[in-house]
Image (cartoon, rainbow, N blue to C red; front, top):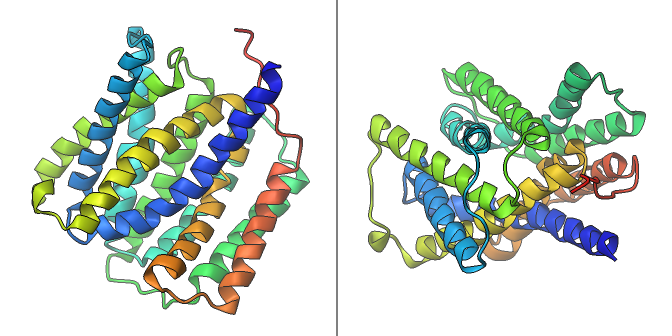
Length: 304
């Protein structure tokens, strides 16, 4: 009875990182027009952590973890949220956002290369085909826009590449590390530590801090959705999946998220969807199929 239930949880978790995270492109775009990026991320993750701790307390979940588990969660939060997310947003000052998305699409390849280096795991042909299709699809998706480069574009390109390495390393680290008995509580620790660090980074960078009470209604609503769904729900689902299925399958969200963002941009902001966009989306989804069809998705057995 436990296997079908866990399989359903895995499906719902994939829905969260595919669809909900895909919507965060739109939500971040709305908020960042009014709020400085590091300050935005600090508020988002800190508030989400407080909310998660409150829910966990109400559910009578154990909140205490060991010192080792705490530092592992802090490291995971840094790799994902501070560097992988925060530095990525900063690097977009120097390169076109379309190019940034294209460069980020190599994450599944990076995960497989790291697994090959660390575990000696052979890269399957279907995975190679899937990753190749994903990169082609991403190129078709972003090449419709004029990719503009500034004088310091090389800085942005290099930094985004390091962000991809950071997120990929974090994915492999979480899949192996001892974080704590509950995915929900682990997420809270990761977000609290990251939100605190991002607060000080924002202070050091001299970002303008604007009270949420002074934001527009659309920015307030978007931030609320980012906190509840983009952070609490989707990031918890992400942590859960890293423990239950192979890391390369989880990394396929890098291909699905832009497709969801494209659809939402068309539906909500009346952004145009071209024939090339449709072809790109089909190629991206086909790439995900090849990666996920390498073997049946089934839960890892932890013996606990």
